[in-house]
Length: 135
Image (cartoon, rainbow, N blue to C red; front, side, top):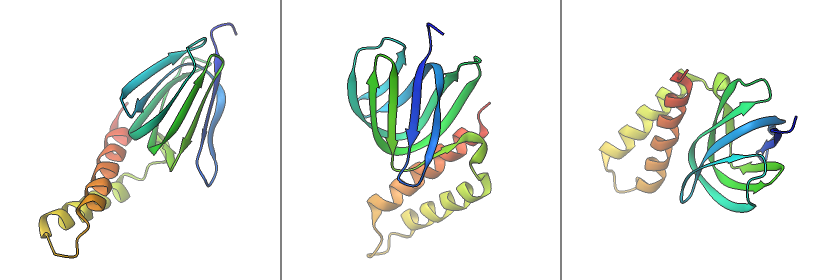
């Protein structure tokens, strides 16, 4: 179709998405960006967050991405993510457990606690919970 372009989301382990889409929005390092077919070419790093895209049938899909890079071309968007999950594959109870562990590490304030790592774990857990609960 004239208004469609290709989306590919890949992690080091596997391809998550490889399909024609109508639009996409993603958490770029300088803020969220949106793209349609014919968008100007650019490359950006990604923050932890949600990638929303409308597939060829018009259905909205949401993915969790844990950082990475996005290349936007006029006819294709490629996302190379550290990790990514489709909304329906997020294990909500596991995400809540991760949230609890991270909050415990941050409130414990032990000398050997890696605060930056615990904050990143908390952020990942909170985004997974948010994405899994969104409709």
